[in-house]
Length: 66
Image 1: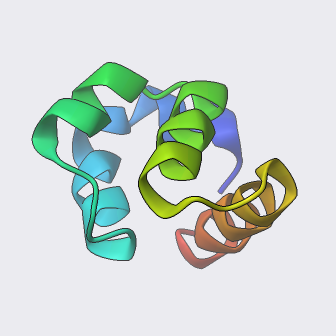
Image 2: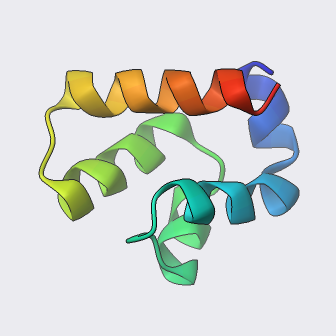
């Protein structure tokens, strides 16, 4: 699945994101609005990881969602 597909199905996909990253709250996924950059920024805040680490994690999650 590519990011455009995830973004288009964000209402269905956001539960998967919360399952993947347990620290995400309902407010966090709503704030992300399906935007990858926003989601990555929120993940950086929650987990204290680098931009590159978070980007790689999101890539891996996106591939699993296929």
